[in-house]
Length: 234
Ligand SMILES: C[S@@+](CC[C@H](N)C(=O)[O-])C[C@H]1O[C@@H](n2cnc3c(N)ncnc32)[C@H](O)[C@@H]1O
Ligand SMILES: [Mg+2]
Image (cartoon, rainbow, N blue to C red):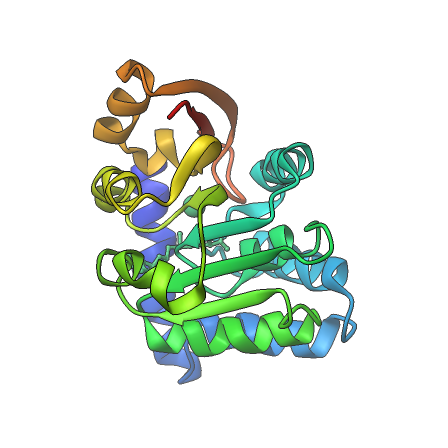
């Protein structure tokens, strides 16, 4: 049962380990990366996090299985501008940034300053800081500021992976702010577990989107989850 597994790993075990070690899960992930991954080698950073999170301590990264689908969609889209909602420790940031064509930029938004600090160090360890703009704050406040702040026209790819309740309002905000063009790809994680039913209903029924489900597994667990790829038609 996915909800039970998430509660167990994300609340009970995390709090227990925080108490016993006097650290936080993101710090434990960062320390493992610094110990085990080669500096400047993005793939070794990804492998280190996957290894830690499958063998030692679960964490809410997109993970290795859905990560392969994410990689394929980044490669087929060849985006110039990418937006990521929800950075956490920078795992998916590194996954995406390492595949970007020359000159492309990834803007990633994280509202938790502690997570953002860890992500900054993980991205630096992977040697990808030149491709990534990490913004700390809430997506609903930062999205309307993006055009002015970063001189962006439109995003070619948006990876949506923050709190599930925000998927739909932030998608509508991206539309309102003129940040999507015909052909922009939205890729939403965890559409089955924990699930984003209002978002799925919207992209699957709106004539403005062409939407497709990619079945996979919840990160590091044998529970069904998947990604929804939705092409904005303008
Ligand atoms: C599932 S984690 C992201 C995992 C990451 N994309 C990966 O796969 O490695 C979700 C993150 O979104 C952040 N978050 C949630 N709601 C947000 C919001 N409205 N604005 C910015 N960050 C948010 C949380 O603090 C959390 O770190
Ligand atoms: Mg996710």
